[in-house]
Image (cartoon, rainbow, N blue to C red; front, side, top):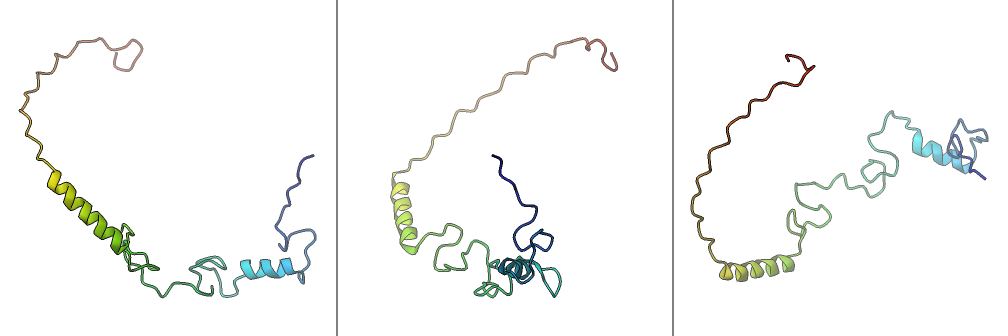
Amino acid sequence: MTREEADFEPGHPKRCDYDPASPEAIEWARKHYAPKGERDFPVDHPKAVDTAGNLNHVATLPGIDPLHPDLEQFSGRTPEQVKAIADLNAQLAKQARETPALEPVIAPDPPEPIERPLPVGQPGG
């Protein structure tokens, strides 16, 4: 048996069983009807002005998590992780050896071009 898909979501004004007083219709109107015009963000979106607890007042800087400004920029590491990685890099730097320079190599001359006739039936041929 195939499932029948509804033409409109519950509460939509064009739905066949629409009742303006139903909870579905009231919720649909709350989400889709904007009395002041078009919205930048949908209802209940974290950046919508009328969403409780939105974070529009928090400055967003490149590489910084506004909810965790104590973490390192771009990597998001804690101060303990940053110190551990710096210690590890210092240990690895002591073990590092300089790579010896390679002997220069002179490239051979390119091969001579091959004279080929143009394909038959092609423009200019």
